[in-house]
Image (cartoon, rainbow, N blue to C red; front, side):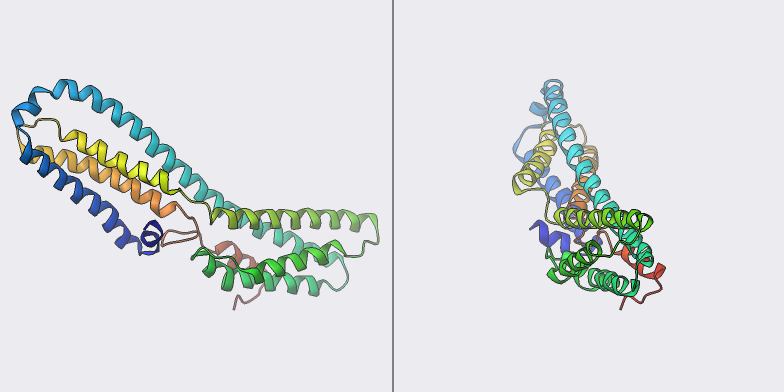
Length: 260
């Protein structure tokens, strides 16, 4: 279900998640009002307020931690993409210190093209690209067997090895992040907690039903928006809100290479 929501366009997903939550909670309020006495609800307002405060704080803390965690993971995914591209740029530049640099540079170009044209579309569907991994591993092996003829070249070679290790680590982290999302138990707690929090507000008595619907509708809208944010950022490389291969496009532009 969550994967299906993430595959929708941003506006459609927002309409379903936020609109669906607001409408369903307002309908729930209508049922509560129809089956309970307003006088009884008014009588217990003071005591219900203390319990709602506890419920609200517990759910707010949980929702905030989840939202911040998904946002940090999204930022980490984007940062790893740029760090990987920077490491490849270092290897590409330092290749000039060795004979026949065009061979290594061509291997790196092929890898970056594969990431853009093959791996990124696969990542949007939760898949890996074996071809991209093979190309980077081949480039790494080539770097490790480059001839070192002097102490100066040895320093450059050490820098290239470090950059390749960084690129490999960043790539693995990038792919791992794409497969790690909020598990089903957490989603169950988030959704159930949202409905429980809003449902409890209907136990308060209001003199005017319209004011009750407006205030509780605003609460539902706020919670729905945060849930939509969590859904949108849960898998950083999937859905309409996703990290793109901009870092690798920029890398090819700096090399004056066509991405096609």
